[in-house]
Image (cartoon, rainbow, N blue to C red):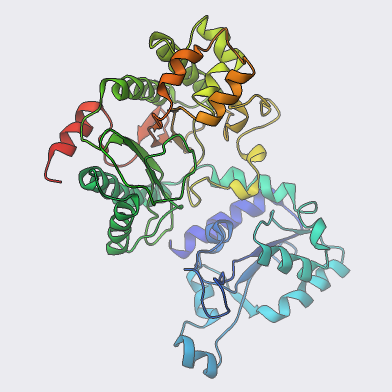
Amino acid sequence: MFKSKVYVKRRQELKEKVKSGILLFIGNDESQVLIRDTVHKFRQNSNYLYYWGLNEPGLAALIDFDNDKAILFGHDLTTEEIVWEGEQKKLAEKARLIGVAETAEFSTLKNVLADFRKRRKRIHYLPQHLDNNIRKISELLNISLDKIMEKFSVDLTKAVISQRLIKSKKEIAEIEKALKISYKLHTAAMQKTKPGKYEYEIVKMMEKILTSKGSRWAYLPIFTINGERLHNHHYGNKIQKGQLVLNDSGAESPSGLYSSDITRTFPVSGKFTKKQKGIYEIVLKSQLAAIKAIKPGVKYLDIHLLTARIIAEGLKKLGLMKGDVDSAVKAGAHALFFPHGLGHMMGLDVHDMEDLGENYIGYDDKIKRSDQFGLAYLRFAKELQVGHVITVEPGIYFIPQLIKQWQSENKFEEFINYKKVNEYIGFGGVRIEDNILVTKTGYRVLGKPIPKTVREIESLMKKKR
């Protein structure tokens, strides 16, 4: 949590962008596991955190333009509630922490909003994706559930995105706090992974590191010998010699709740085979080239395509692809091996502001999302700006089902050597990911460097394991 002046400034900037109406922000509630009193660890809605800073359930807030004021809605605990939950700060005290002068009981919010509606005040709210928050908006504004996502404010959404896209020095510091912990996660995983262990043993070991630092996962980690599965949250496989492990995991900063998102791929045996090294070096070359290309004014779409060409060129040298590289990439043939986008914005959310709509975040009137397989999954395509924090995460994967389908259709057979590709079935996948800040002069790789060259990884894994 930052000082109150940070939140006051953010809200003032938001008012200058939207200019009229009522801005309504709904915080998250506790999420139940099975019954009322068994809940998941709480995490506040990131848009609420950005403007109101309070990481606790049962809150809402609004900005009233006509009266030039902000109001925090919540609930002061009764004596009976204190018996179970302990004494907590009063709502007025919480409001002072974020620079808000006026508070009200949450139960009054519906009537307050009804009065605004009677006076024909436009009430702006953001897209909602959690069922509880959708129901709240429906009840508070008397909008049917199926209309909630139709009636959100595009003006407010675009204004929030424009602010949250540009990270302040304080935000960068929080991301680097998260990355400091992620460094420990990844280096420990490389050193502790060995044949005979199960994936869940390494995941639990990383969780202990998180707990010891007062942190938590920024997202559900991917730690798997099945690297060809882009999102894999099963940790039951026994790790065996000769396999590659893909570790896509990141910590959240303990106080500010900002994310980190790092991927490393490494050999279980501690040494890459010739085949593994061949693929790994292509991915690394493409990632380093992508990072080097980052600077203000460059379209991230162009950097994605640069990466795709380097991957296609490397695969051609290995005999997995053939024909003209530029033509292959234009057609989308490389997506058999690289079927996702190069990266995404990062901040309070690991996929920052994904709930507000990727087409608002990553695209604009100049750049529209492609419908081509692979390229369609690029989350951010428009021009980079100073203050953006973006992931760079190219990969090469050998997905048996996708290979089988494309081969049966003779798809891109002028560019793909299916006979050679089938020799790589069972290889898995390789992805390398870092978090990059766009600066005035180019870029800065955030966080302490985590081993990623073949030599660095093998050297670390030689140490006491």
